[in-house]
Length: 88
Image (tube, rainbow, N blue to C red; front, side, top):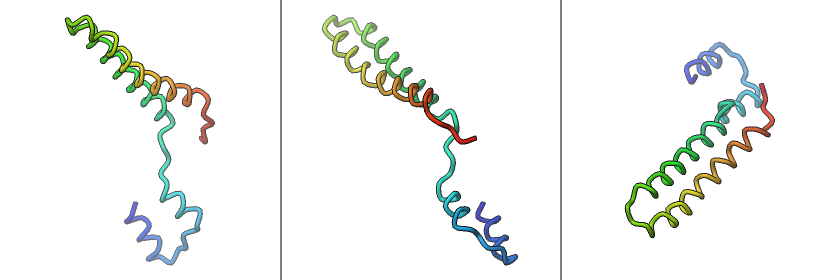
């Protein structure tokens, strides 16, 4: 990318402010929110499975509560993915 910009400047082409702004803010992948949501929910499922794998009865409830946090974050990302307006 840097070589392309340098070559354009060497040839005397001007870089518009819009182009410079776009270069400074790369586009996020379209399915970024979906991927993050799936990852967070997978972490929550892993913690929930761990809560049942530990033989200590009193550990299940608190670990399921801890698993709720990444689950809610993952669900929020999936909701954002569903309702986000995308530029194609």
